[in-house]
Length: 297
Image 1 (cartoon, rainbow, N blue to C red):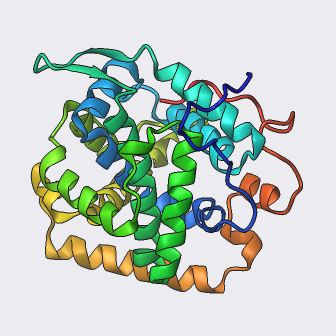
Image 2 (cartoon, rainbow, N blue to C red; image 1 turned 180 degrees about the vertical axis):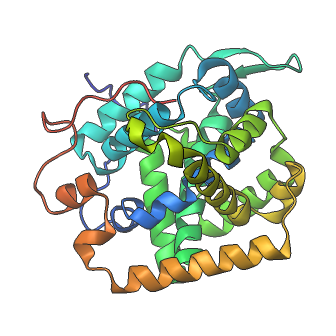
């Protein structure tokens, strides 16, 4: 895929690289803990939720969707020159995702504000990862991570005008979105149900069928704790999700266990395998060692 020249007045996209704070955060295993809540925040946006409901495999191919989305993320965060091509591919993929939602409102997946919201949730969730499951980022680190989030936004072709220029302005923007911009979309309700009752993974050995109901119950409870337990209380209320003292205690225990375990892990065990190999310079995503991704949803 050839890259297009940047529009006049727009900064050319510069991929993230070694030494960036996002490279240190996004590929850690503990970053996976905020994936459920990131998806929930994203699809609670009316336009994002409508596009996902009409054009995604939400509710039918959970595991495949997760693998495709993860493969795409590997490229646009860790892919170097390949990141720009992945950003263009995602824009092209979503260009036809338009229509009318259940309330008669038009939507388009590439609406600037909606597209920016998806990128905004990544920054906020990565900061939340460190706050809940590690050491909170210092103010200078937050500013650095946010600058890298804007850099990633350019790679993904998020309109510059939709990205608040500073962390302080981002906080006001994010708070306003939480209070006034999100709704209890059908996509959010479907995603919550999918988390509660995850489908059987493809390729699960037949001999484990008897154990799957118990495993499914444990996975569903953990996914809900991570999703509902890490979103702002206002979003819980919006989605009609009760949060009890017992659940808060369970979540606190889980978070404490993650913090304790992560602190003693050697560096090579903290990162997802392919991310560790990229960070070490062993290979770049997209070379023959990694299969080309199918369209993420």
